[in-house]
Length: 258
Ligand SMILES: NC(=O)c1ccc[n+]([C@@H]2O[C@H](COP(=O)([O-])OP(=O)(O)OC[C@H]3O[C@@H](n4cnc5c(N)ncnc54)[C@H](OP(=O)(O)O)[C@@H]3O)[C@@H](O)[C@H]2O)c1
Image (tube, rainbow, N blue to C red):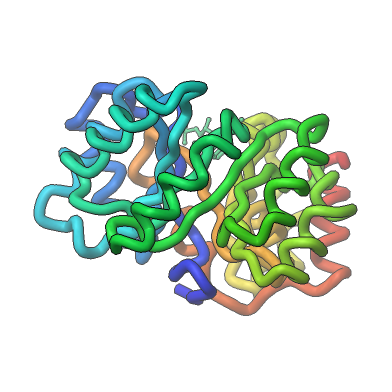
């Protein structure tokens, strides 16, 4: 799989997938890692997902790049979330402030943890375009190294300010909702409609959508979520070049109905 600044370009999201189901997590995480994915994105907001991912990793922890989050208005609660993450994962490769919650309060102690070597990179996330002004403010501090935002043919607001800003600041970009939370997969184009994309290694509609995201070189990793190990393998396979040009991207947009 192609690698950019955060490693292989297809990772795995964990929102609304296995929750406390560690057995399911094991099957899906195994399939993703075997397919070459490394970035596993989670959060204390996702129920039991963090703990399930940790259990699923078991003796494969060294293969994973754990991207999780702090989601707490108060320092004390944030510290508890972080202590549990260290217990489960040993260290955190990408620690993100979820939805900008109390980011100014959390930055100083998170920086101390990074300086102590228990965190590799600090990041910040938001899912709503209405919060992108605040996300840009956080990015401009120069104190975060990654940003996580939504990007797919129906959600392109990040192209206006955030992607250029991330490029200017040298920040790595993690893309949430690359499949539009599954909504983009409800209508699947006919196989003949995907024919022009075959030479780009596209076998399925989900792969066409992932390649649409990853063909924007400002993106470092897309993190599709799934409960299905076959989907995890299929998604990982979309991380191989060649990438789409403008014509192929427009075709995907048209097929998506955007
Ligand atoms: N949504 C948010 O607001 C949000 C916010 C912050 C962070 N994130 C992070 O970003 C990750 C990804 O976003 P997301 O989970 O909202 O949505 P997503 O990855 O765009 O879509 C997930 C949906 O796509 C389906 N899917 C995945 N691969 C498929 C394939 N190959 N073929 C057919 N269906 C497929 C999944 O169903 P199956 O289980 O059937 O495969 C699931 O319903 C989250 O899990 C989380 O880690 C999301």
